[in-house]
Amino acid sequence: MSRIGRTFKRIREKKGKAFIPYIMAGDPDLNRTVQLVKMLEDCGADIIELGVPFSDPLADGPTIQKAAQRALREGVTLGGVIDLVADLRKVTQIPIILMTYYNPVFRYGEERFVRDASAAGVDGMIVPDLPPDEAGVLRKYARKAAFDTIFLLAPTSTEERIRTVARASTGFIYYVSITGITGAKLSMDPAIGSHISRIRQESRTPVAVGFGISTPEEASAVSRFADGVIIGSAIVKRTEEPDEDLKAYLLSLRGAIA
Image (cartoon, rainbow, N blue to C red; front, side):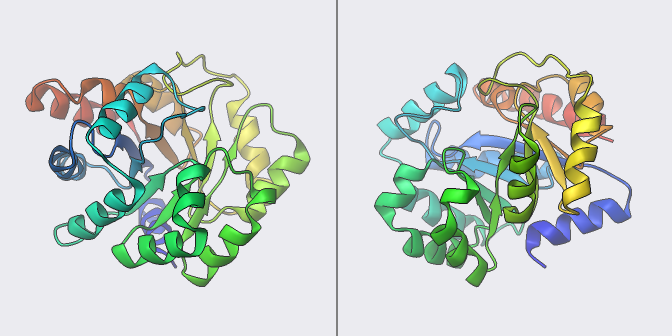
């Protein structure tokens, strides 16, 4: 069982839900990213999603796009993020996922990416512009390395797509709570519970929900249905605030996720 799998198993045994924050690696620099990872863990994060900066982040809204641009100006690359995780493993064993687009992985080399990321201590990947039916080679390398592949479902996903993603995803399934980009305002789909129940008919893999969640109240509402709650843009917006304010916000999220 992967580190992500063990984390969800532990949380389920305690009848809890996972808090999965997202930050952009290298925003504003890699040293600050190390500080933020430690803060997220101290504030109760269960799994951390690290964004890899890319110049054309099609699934991301303005907040994360700007964060990616700041990181790119600092010269942050996919290789640099992998090296960062290797350094983080000297001080933390919290599960870490890379959220990256396919272009950086393709340029780096799929086999080399999985090998280097896994060796550095990365636990899995989310590649939002690579659907599972086009990810056969990358999935093959990932299986050999016990490296989790996390694919996305949305309210508009067909039955066939649900089955495909359920079969291909390891670690957890990422359910996109809205049809839009990260940072968009959450409008709670009244059918979210039935959608997640439908996914669970196809797989025992945990389902985590993200996109548009920003307040403790929203996090609490989502946690009633999901195995984990992913919060990104709202945290990225606050990373420039004083650390005490950021910590208070993170703790409020942690407390709201049952």
